[in-house]
Length: 120
Image (cartoon, rainbow, N blue to C red; front, side, top):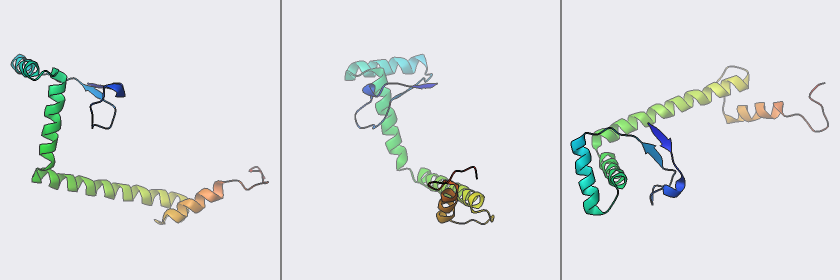
């Protein structure tokens, strides 16, 4: 479960609004977390946040993850191009894949001219 919290609680360098995340952990792990928090003088929440940030930094350099990220990025680009083509086809009127000029000219055609009413 997650929920948004106020930006005032945002950690330095995160650049965004903080969200709450509920995580189930064993009693043993929680006891260890509490001891580490006590030893470092930080809260258990801060220790978890630091651990996650460290883990994410580590994962970013994993070659297998990088390969998967490139595949995901390529899929996103293919999907975006398909959607751009669909929009162009809808607004070009001829069913071709047109470009942004077709969308712009379609938008211009729907804008009423000055002095003309749209109910002629």
